[in-house]
Length: 182
Image 1 (spheres, rainbow, N blue to C red):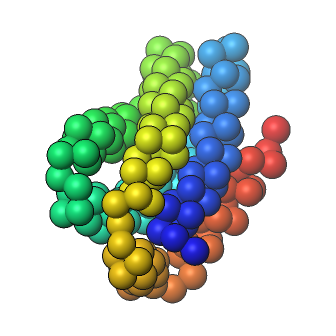
Image 2: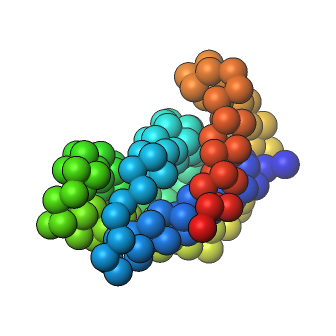
Image 3: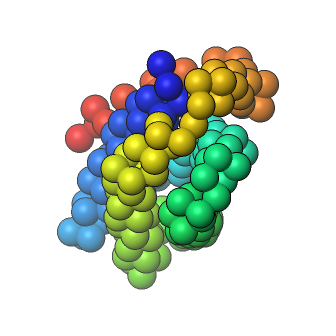
């Protein structure tokens, strides 16, 4: 298994949560109340799985190795993708800040929360498409076999040490729970 295979699999898990977040946002846009617990769980997932786990693997390990192996080829896409990671963090923070007033019944806050959810969903879907179809094929070309092995080990360390034992699996389960809710 290549590091890009691990990241592609994580993308599938992230997309499940994005679909659930979009359902929540569309319900709010239609005049429904926010399901505070679900939105809170989606925000938690975005912070801990998408950012602290998935984006950490890319930013701390994959991106630097790609810059090392192919500085010119990797420079532009990596700059764009890093900017999107930052924008995602900003949107997640805005969602977290907007959730309490939205849950308290502030209709303007509900609409803003729905808009931030949709912005985040759209951003991440486009971001995942770029990584799956542009960055990862480039990585598979430029990374050596020893790079691939070292990246897999680094990814495992992030899951076990930085996140904690069992946390990665917890978020896989949460993604399935959120995806199955109407």
